[in-house]
Image 1 (cartoon, rainbow, N blue to C red):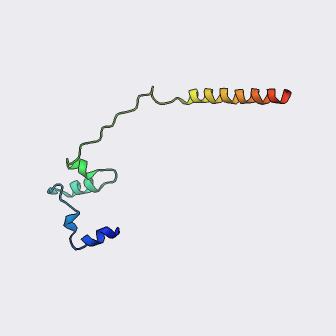
Image 2: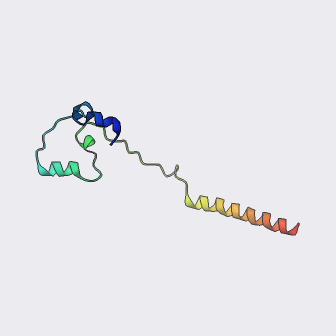
Image 3: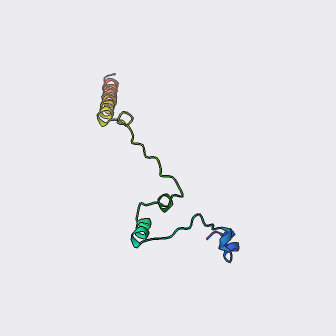
Length: 87
């Protein structure tokens, strides 16, 4: 615990505030809020849902293209080494 927080051990209300109060209508609703990967603030409407935009295929680098670039680099390095040995 941070030492500056020790001053507030008897009055946590100075650091903690109620954002929203709600009633739990069923056990399933409570279990949904406790589930892994669920943001309870989003589920309760306190925060907006994060925008998920799929990345277009054109923006992701292609593995074959990277392979070609690596092959050219290796071939260039081999040519350089062979020419150095002949000289």
